[in-house]
Length: 335
Image 1 (cartoon, rainbow, N blue to C red):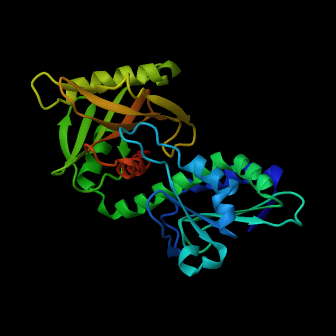
Image 2: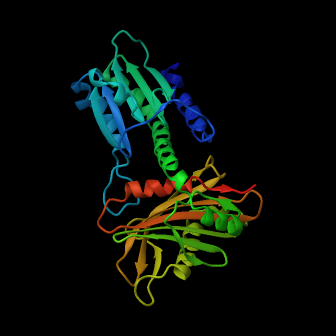
Image 3: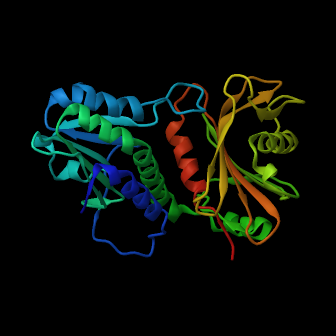
């Protein structure tokens, strides 16, 4: 276990996150599978006062913010709670653990981190401080790095679940057409296959889930700005993704939930731009969330964009979008 002082805590978090992206599929482990609900964090405190007071409030305020790009309000994470005396063997295996401690004798806040301590995938962080105020200040310096790690843990859980279900035929088509592999699970069918585009659709009675992969020539970094990404997306989906009525087609919502993007320099397939937002249908009332990654192919002058979207009216979609995110994170260029 790494013991570091408060001023170095963020460095450890960032280093820990960098190690998350290593493919551990070949590693053998005797660790139990981690437990916990989807998108759940377990906070362990010494007493109820810490949970109900400013310590618990700081954790809830940050992690239970609404996830952007969903049509109904849904929290990024659910923060559950137990006191330290209830931390039995089962709870010790929780995937995302924050353990809080107040020790009046400690001079400087102390941060202790451990990956895969009692289960896998798992990340445990212990923050010890002399007062609730000091504890909250220490947490505030850690929270962004913690969210990256907890997000990664959720992706790893879904990736392990879907990996045995990979559809080898679709993977072979992606490899031949785009020079990529991606662990698309069974149940998806090729709904459209254009010159530079492939639409994969999984249809259920009450919902549709889709992946869309397309490629275009790469000229310069301006191709990766948000406006260009959305303009390209709109041209592709207008051509290939029809709505249910004659003349209707998919587009990107730019009024109610504006698309947002961020750069991911350490995306598994290389430098990428993530875009989140809402899609809707021109000429109909359909809508839902989408998530895309645009990556420059390192061996050619092309940008490959892979996105997932969901149609599941009036139902929660956060966990379904997390599932699609985990599959998109499996994208790799063929060497």
